[in-house]
Image 1 (cartoon, rainbow, N blue to C red):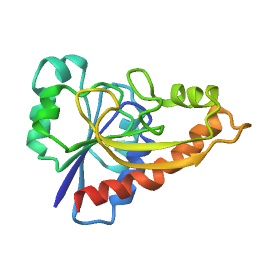
Image 2 (spheres, rainbow, N blue to C red):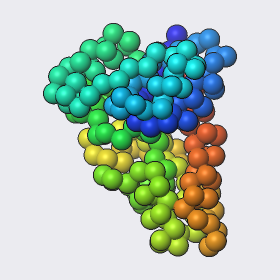
Image 3 (spheres, helix red, strand yellow):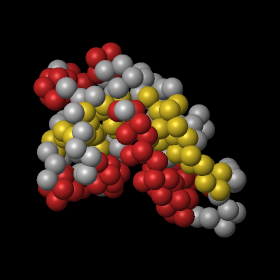
Length: 187
């Protein structure tokens, strides 16, 4: 049995997609979803999907071992950041080397780094008149969006595409590729 822990900060659409992907796979368990926002919509999705959801604050994450102890009790085979916006503390990276992955809504190394998430990325892609964009699934290290790349998938950006259209194209890539890459990493 393989345990996955998901971290999310927002609506949790990627979380729901991952949970549904693994629903009929008896060798994989979504052991829980951790969020840094008390009112994150991902907690509503957890209730609907019958998945344990847990909120933690900045103090618990950065200044205590609270989150580390929770993870140690779960014994995750993989920690998946699915729209999680805080930098992962070094103690977690050291405890789970090459066991924490993230998805970024662009083709890294472009459009990465602190503050580059969500619509900010898609607006930057549009502003630069990029001809393509995509997703990058990568390992998490001590720097934002600089861990070793596991997988990238691309989509064309048309001159008339708005940031919202770009976002929807990228989201389709996320839904298609993220669960499959997670499954491959667990194999």
